[in-house]
Image (cartoon, rainbow, N blue to C red; front, side, top):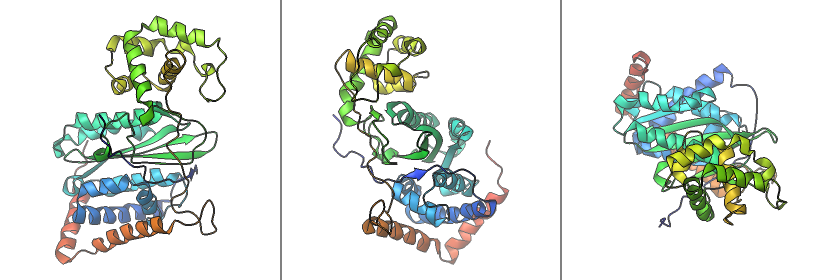
Length: 369
């Protein structure tokens, strides 16, 4: 049975999509300040604390403001993650913190980047690669909320702790949604795994990682193993002739059986034991999961959850009361956390010299390939 200490969704931010890039002069300063803040936190509290803070949507958003990026832009996610990655480049072994992935094509290089760090870490890279892939699979296929992932950054320590910051975009609304994960809070990849989801809700979401979706997850995994693909495809074709209830955004018109046979045959051949194994299979994507969810509900009477995990907007509110008055408690928490990090950066002479030596070594260290 699942333990009761479930992860809490810790924060929200509504992020409009902005074009362009940070000016070089600004990004270079973001890299330097991000490096110093990271060194201060890791030196005082350890690399695991940096993971916890990156998994806190409020703290992440505040850090983006501190280093000078647009306070409400979707670009704060991609630019801040990129600056932190560049900032500790060459220092990973000394800092005990590693960063892989990024935006677009860089996100797809995450597994290879994790593997390249194998000589410097104690953990099995395969487990870290699996965590990276499952976080992406969950937020793209198991949670279908209208946002297509385009950014994935994976933070991890030598011992194997990890955090994920990834973001998707909704092309219709031109808004982004950011997803935060923390390994110490993930008891089950497919049941309430997030430490925070930042965005406004934009309609009904197919949420197969909600706790109340447990029966649907079980049914979906079972039918892919027990039912022959031909039967499932026939059920989908039959459903297309039914009058579907208007209460769901998910309807039979969204399903195209002719495109699903490969995924269904693959699942039947592999015989996944549970929903997580099914979701982890190559070739099982949003369309296949959506079709199986429809079969689960319409044929077997087991409905998934349509509860969107995002509930509020903005981190701290606005001074004029829009979209709501400033949340002083949260605001003060962000200030305290960041103030503490900056104060810790004022190291005594011995610690500062050691930090400078690390930076000096980083400038001449060969790049890991």
